[in-house]
Length: 482
Ligand code: HEM
Ligand SMILES: *[C@@H]1O[C@H](CO)[C@@H](O)[C@H](O)[C@H]1NC(C)=O
Image (cartoon, rainbow, N blue to C red; front, side, top):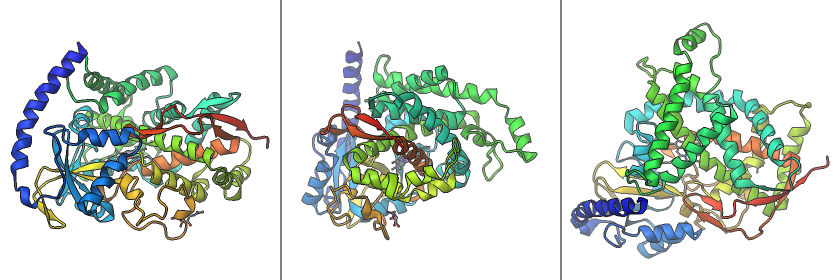
């Protein structure tokens, strides 16, 4: 039944899209960027995805960059005409023309799943939502949560690692980041509630990258239902709180900032307007989504590289910082904001991990008008793409780019627009500081208690759609004796 539905709707989509595709393709062929649209409808989709699945997302882009002159080329993916903007110049152009020539754009499947929220909105509305969310996500606000994050992390590691010889890192980290987000965003701590949400969330994640066909039985259909169910859960939590009481508390000078939800309940925009229940629910849902697999992927790859480079592990622990920070603390004393600022080398190691394995290999924009770039016409409505993975591997920007070398970030660091794991410009990741806290606190706890080695020394990494070791990265733990 599911197969039949999928096949049927896939066919319908092909027919409708093929028509508009040919019309667009006929337009001003002469001045368009170089490149090939490939096959009708599917375009070069298969070539692009195959490259990712083989763990080489760059081969698709790098091959074409060479062939077409390193600046820009056109292709077609899942029915859309796409221009790939190459290198630091291309990144700079897209990041600095948001709301002028381009706006953020995500595949339609994501737009439907997440409805109106920071991810799917553009222009002034995107700015308004960003300002409201930043009341919780800005560094000054997050400072107060370092201790909470530390205590959750300690407990997690104790519960799941103590007394174990082998731990599979990917599923472990995935649960860890999800539970931390549930707690900090909506104070969900009850294990049963959390596992219900996590179950729904996994259905959502599977469907988010499926073909967006809304027939009962398809993965995408199940994902839309799961998203609705999570939103309903969040609304229930909102209703159990009293906005009036929170606002009164705030007026009386009592802090109300226990979690993201209470921040959003009292935050007002420049017209003094509160966020609606739906706005809060949609935005919490999308933050859970955007912050989950990304941070999981960085932590997993960080554990992998630290096992492969014992000298870097030693520097993280001893020569430079994490052991010293732990020694400066009394028994049971939690980490604070100043401790995080000392973790410079650890962050540079994380930075090098994100250079080699950016969780988001790139993202889209949409042209809001016809414009000229590097002498080529970019028609309105075209999708534009910036690529973190190919920029990060460009030998003009990073010497011996395939080498893992955290010292490359010492001194002045990389040139502007060459290191872009969080994007850039007005749409830059608003969760960057939150991710940094999670990652550094986790790293602190992991290295101070354990050393580890890989169970499979040659475990492959596939990119589908984010870089993940194919066997979930089992590691062998060695507890420290000190
Ligand atoms: C290491 C982890 C993370 C990485 C590498 C990452 C990367 C990115 C990138 C590259 C973008 C920009 C996409 C674009 O320019 O179109 C983005 C956007 C976004 N990220 Fe993150 N992210 C991470 C963690 C998080 C976390 C923890 C949260 C939530 C707390 C989050 C929430 C978001 C949201 C809501 C957007 C959309 C912003 C907008 O459309 O204006 N991210 N992220
Ligand atoms: C870390 O990177 C920053 C920015 O690139 C650099 O200024 C600093 O020297 C580096 N610190 C260490 C300890 O490597």
